[in-house]
Length: 226
Image (cartoon, rainbow, N blue to C red; front, side):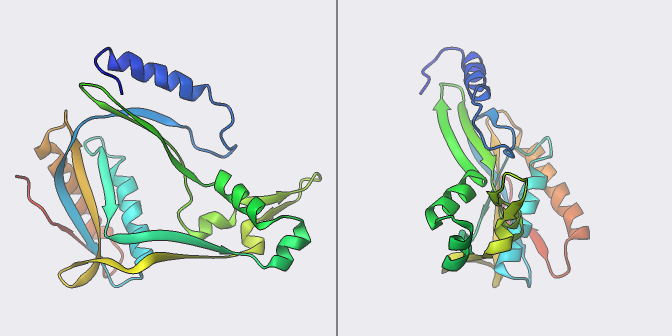
């Protein structure tokens, strides 16, 4: 915890240290270091539709990613779902054929799919959140992971040897909105943001999204600005 002092300089020092790390996975995205200020809830968006839970969660994650590209929206969390798990099943005979153990396969996959909090640093004025992200979210994204590489350049990818599925556990954890299965996007503002400006950015985003959303998908603002 930083007590007083120049938080901006401290952030710069942290970024320098993170940039000096040279053993991240080859295909990893660039590590991002940025200050996260104190937050307040602004509005929620309920997303419902006659689709599978997996497809609904994927759509909510896509909405979150696109919201965060807008300059007036800084913080979005997806809620309403149980813990999502990617299940990877490989026959023992296949592992033996390629000379790799289950533990070794788990380590290879883990190194190539990361979403790790590096830490949180607090000062009197702000909170700095550090996170390294190179996470795969769907079976399709896991299929292209290289698990065995030969000296001649040949590669075996996870999709070549494994059955990959996703599921949510426990299944009974769910959120309903107007009686329908829903995912909730919780939008918050940082201390320096204007609540009405953030709300208006979300409202415009939802209005535009309704025009292009997949058939049967609905988006509703669920909390007014107080």
